[in-house]
View 1 (cartoon, rainbow, N blue to C red):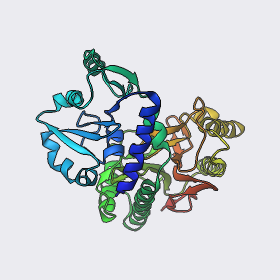
View 2 (tube, one colour; view 1 turned 180 degrees about the vertical axis):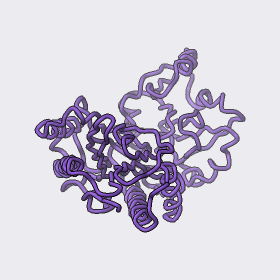
View 3 (tube, one colour; view 1 turned 60 degrees about the vertical axis):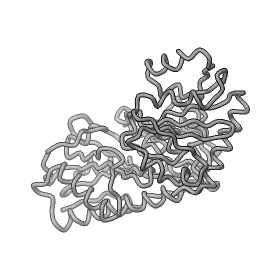
Length: 376
């Protein structure tokens, strides 16, 4: 659980920003940022389940009546540093701010989190002046504070244990006749054993040629000897996510697959070694991975970013793509996940969860030594 002092610190930083921008308040609509500021987590983050607002004096959480119980249980509300206000329906959430700020107030809003209809609604209140919030929250959330780091270390360690348990189960019980969906159910059961009840996203379990699709949709393909098995999954705990990918082989692998696996693993290790605060940008680290694969004659098969930030969202800043100039900083929690994909044949991805520190990169995911696992 995030401490109240950490929430107070976040509120102070937001108010400093309000002062600097010369505005009365910020209206917060994204589920992740609402959780970051108030501690409230809804059930469907892609729906408008809550709205929050920070002013120079108060922090408000606007909820529909269906969430009143949950809202009243939040430690920030119980302690009085967040005021929870309830409307009967969701439709009124976006207008509840009006009675809490002066009529002529200037406010900032999350311009990348409103529909056109919602923006038109806010703009229709001519008495208020609206300005975009820009990177206020993404900048704050990129660097994880002590409470966040503790939660992330815990959920990643438990996710590691799930993968280790899965490999042990397949080695002991066998995999013949099982489907990709059966593996998802095994992950779910092993997660419950680790007190993890919710996936961060629909797990990718890709057997055989399905592994050549980076975002493969798990199906009913049966596992057989001679197949690679790419597994990409994560769990949520206290609102924070883990993310882990491993590629194993069912039966005895081929020399070609083993060679390509070694290349991906080497790229993974080099990227982690170069992942240092202050000395390199996310875009530069991605470009180094592209250059590495180019020297191996494989750059055309590396078709996604090198990694991304993880926290209250499974994909958040910083993003490791060539156009991203964000400098890496101590406190960032990121994935490093190089992969190569041969259409119609197979794909290989190795993803680790990394926390940047003042001295380098602390790898939080330790499941196996990352050498190729073959399950007879």
